[in-house]
Image (cartoon, rainbow, N blue to C red):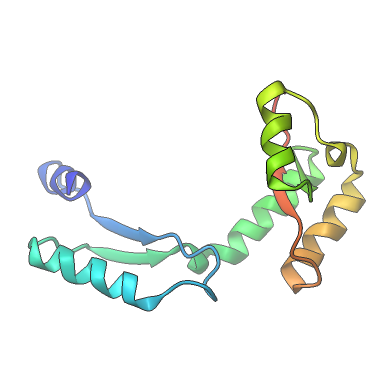
Length: 124
């Protein structure tokens, strides 16, 4: 609601973006209910978009980040990943080469692997 009112107040546009980063598991009923609820509140977005609309661009940005050494593929289990992050310990995957990271990333895109995620290589 705030975004809508700020957009109207300052002559901007209200863009409603649904974060469907895994479109296969997303339920259309949630999108429909949100749009119905907004309409009930007389909030009509100027544009509706979905994260999946930008997957190709996101993939290109990630490839560049990996090639520049600013991101890496990590298959550390979630509980261990949180533990390492909390104490500032580097993941073993952080030392992968650019080539290894790109291979894991391409395997993610093609569906050959589902165990990896891409992480930004930030200061520990």
